[in-house]
Amino acid sequence: MEMRKRIAVIVLIFSMVMSALMLPAGAAELALKAPSAVLMDAATGTVLYESNEHERLRPASVTKIMTLLLVMEALDSGKIGWDDMVTASAAAAAKGGSQVYLKEGEQMTMDEMLKAVVVSSANDCATALAEHVAGSESVFVDMMNRRAQELGMNDTHFVNCTGLDDGADAGEHLTTAYDIALMSRELLRHKAIRKYTTIWMDTVRDGKFGLSNTNKLVRFYNGTTGLKTGFTSAAGYCMSATAVRDGMELIAVVMHCASSPDRFESAKALLDYGFATYALVTPEAPGELGPVQVKLGKTSEITPVPASTEPILIDKNLKNSVTTTVELADTVSAPVEKGQKLGTMTVKAGEKTLASIPIVAPERVERLTWWQIFGAILRRACLTA
Image (cartoon, rainbow, N blue to C red):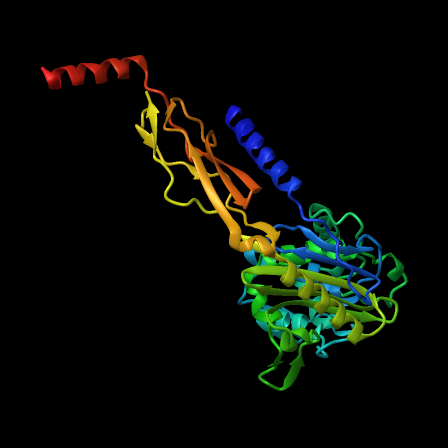
């Protein structure tokens, strides 16, 4: 219990330092044609730009980010498999909008189903995948809403797995730009999804049915990694666009745009602003840490580690002036608890402190008992006799 308290305090202190260094969101005046928008750093979750980011709007097919997230999580857990054949039900085959025209009873591989959903936003395949995971779309939608709450998507409510707004309850299917960024960030943790989100053109059904990515940034914006577009007449043109440059991945969400060009230009403007203004640095000690001598410990020394290796988001102008210094105890008395602070790694840009990261013990070192100490003294005396 004491060890957990110590670790919690260290993490809290680090979080407080990092929160104090948060960069202001929405500080720039961007000429966006998106009524609602947000720009988020994928690594840290820091919001870099925001405009009406908590306004509840219809997301159209951007909904499928959550559908894909639950499918990827089911694959990771082993609930479903990459070798599975997915069968289209009558309900899946009846879906309108974007589709690959599945027929009831038709089977596709997991790979082709995912490809069709990601690349061409196929509603029939999204529904088939939802049923494959949960047995029915309604049960799957319950899973979507539970997962949304777990991710802190407090302004989101899903009524289907596709984003289609042709149902009687379509007006209740709502989310926000900020919430979309949260689920986009979570989906990006699944590296396998990038195999699909970066496809420009492909085929399914042994090359007989062509797919073309609805996300035009895949072809026309350097570094694009995804993610999902959406459109209905009620939702307007929406998208979550993701791209990576110089090791920094950004998530740009725009909603309710009047046209497709407005959607893509707004997303590009957000990404351009982020890449021009910010950078990520990973804290690294200037040399090897430790070891720290342990007095009266069952282990004579311990090699400490940073409590966090998370990257730090900074103003890009400061990137080349970043320095790291380490202050480390020479000795520590046993017992040493796992996570016990043994020093500090300070990251600076010029005179500005970016982060103070605790350096901690990676494991517990128990104290020698009195009998063990007496035995060690006796052995030393015999050796010198």
